[in-house]
Length: 110
Image 1 (cartoon, rainbow, N blue to C red):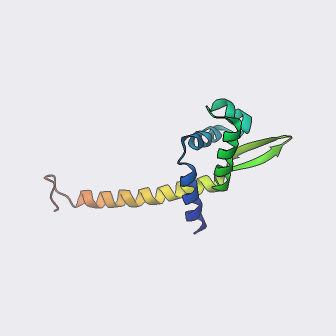
Image 2: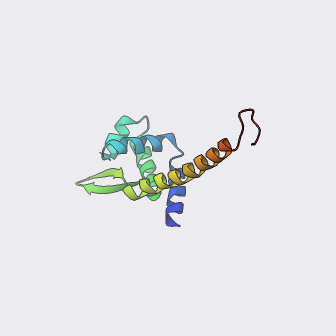
């Protein structure tokens, strides 16, 4: 059940376009707050707030390197979201396939 809770929090966190942009950038490589702020149209404090939400949702992790905090994607959080999407998408595809196989070309049920 922890994965379901994690993915729910993750989807809430991904509801903001700036947080999605941060996740996309961290998908390429780890980055500092300043590197993220330089690439986004928001302030460094705003980036820090977004990172805190992403961290609380289990999508990113931080590590100290000197005076900087370096952020990267958290594999477990990303995996939980991926598994959730695969499960939901797989169920939806199965239902669609069943409906398609039981429908005639004229739109009626067979």
